[in-house]
Image 1: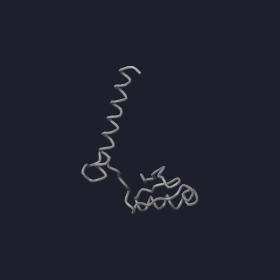
Image 2: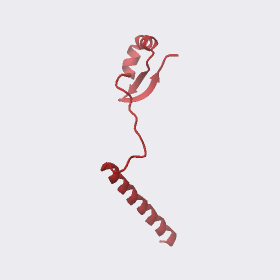
Image 3: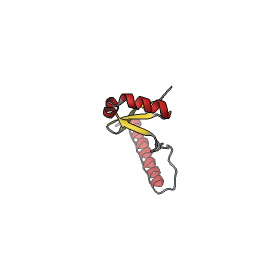
Image 4: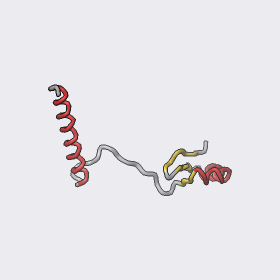
Length: 85
């Protein structure tokens, strides 16, 4: 193993150790995370793509009248947002 590869491995290991230490601090609430996870309010309506296909006309009317977005999901994950213009 060359000296350069050995140094790169050592640096990568030190970076991993630092990351694990940060994770521990975050878990113990002694450090804030660098990322924020935003969740959508429960008041926003969502519907599965299968149900949306079945009731597309009524959902379009709902969006038009309520002026609220409609989140369309596939397997529990949002895949589209329908809004009125």
